[in-house]
Image (cartoon, rainbow, N blue to C red):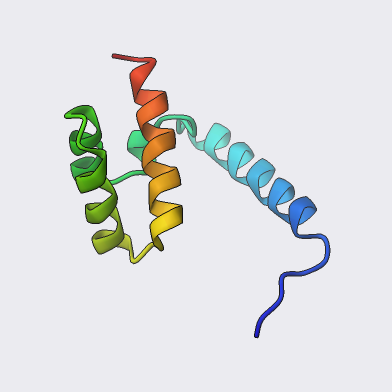
Length: 83
């Protein structure tokens, strides 16, 4: 059984900061779910078909159910503010 490093939260925070800096340097909008979520999944989210979006995301990425649902829910929330 693999255990997480004791300071996992700090490590994740540093990685997120590095990603934000890289995205900024490259001119990529890191908050845009279209850059993280496949286009087909975004289309399903916009069509208010979240269950199908989760299924497709899992099929395309191999993500676990909880992770895919969180990503779809987060993308839907971000996209909702732009609709």
